[in-house]
Length: 194
Image (tube, rainbow, N blue to C red; front, side, top):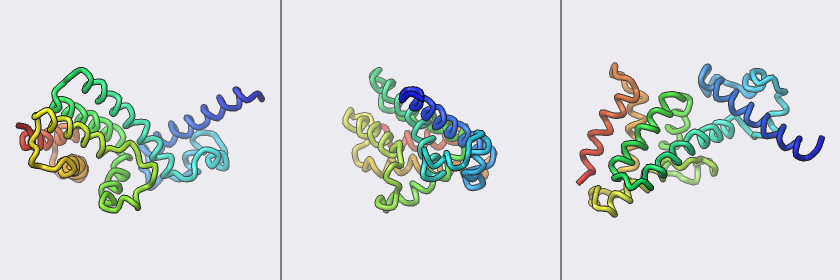
């Protein structure tokens, strides 16, 4: 096999593992999915898995990075259109809510990240996208443009956004996930805008 064909096959196998893992995580949940489950569903040998990933946690982080890269790109595009920081923040929040709603297996990873956020040395080195950083950049932009209050620290506001997703995930209210986020978001945005 030539080098190009081998590299192409590796890319295809890696993507097949990611796509299959996404489906397995959606169907069974992250905790109930094993590496063997992923590889059996992908029709690949279990040993092949370790040519691409060290653990299912690494697979999950790769999936999350891919999903959030799309959100991050959309947010950057909207910000470049000179939208208000409030519009960008609301858009980012709702895109994130949609993404989480459609991919519920992400919630445990985000909850772990929030729990470890006061101990950054314990966070996986490649935990990305930096969900918190995306929100902080938008909030900082809004403060610099005089759209958001400056008397509330950026990292505190960003932490509140994390809390919205976590609270909604465990909410007992009979409100759909994205609508629940939107209602909580309105309260938060009303509190920080000028």
